[in-house]
Image (cartoon, rainbow, N blue to C red; front, side, top):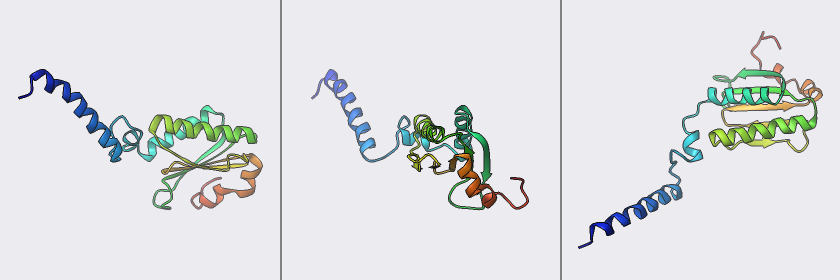
Length: 150
């Protein structure tokens, strides 16, 4: 028959094994990045994206509501940076903030060139352009609802 002290000593070890199993099995724990991301809606992500862009001095920020119009995301955000360096920095900081705050891993394309960077946050697609490149592609015209001012 085990002593009472021996049983108490085993309990923390059993707790440790159980928490290791939940991590190994992929079950999100409340403190893990996946657990933090589970209940974050697209409106919360959009608000953080817009705040990040504002903090980093992005210009001409436009938000396009894609709900009911596309399955790729709920929102699209288009903005400009003044130079290739600023475009890259805006994108990098946004990805870093979303990872730190929500555990959200974003896909990013075009950061090395710095002309047009696409960030896919899953719920919000963000395009960061140099002004000349943005003018050339005119994504706003393609995605804005008919009759909306651009």
